[in-house]
Length: 201
Image (cartoon, rainbow, N blue to C red; front, side, top):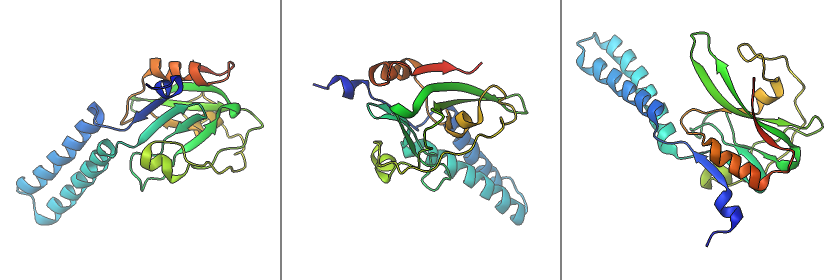
């Protein structure tokens, strides 16, 4: 029988969802068009390469099953990018450093929106370094080297209501699903009483 802690740990993984599946299929369609569209060779190669890259990136994202978010008794781990060679690395923040978990939305110039989850940390907390390889391989927290806290930065365009330090400790909810009720249950089970899940205005 699982203990309360094991049952309430929240682990969200990258997987096959509507967005990743649709974009992977679009990549395949572009490759098919390049092969069967009667294009000149150089143009077919360029278009086919673009389609192949799109397919590989989004199929890799969906098929990686890598951890996107983990909330456990130790704190919150923001997963890395869906691909192991990406620039975003897993980051663990212990509960004593966390003031709030912030859900926010960024509006893109074209009118689309992207949902994010971020962390607001104490002013005197150090910025965490990337979590170790254990997180990337097994979906559990690895050691978290510490680094000096980044200085405050001005708010980014299109997210005027979100502080820059929250933006810096955020991950897009893309290629995985955020279960708000499970997130809240994990925070209730593990976090200190002052930590809340909040929506940025």
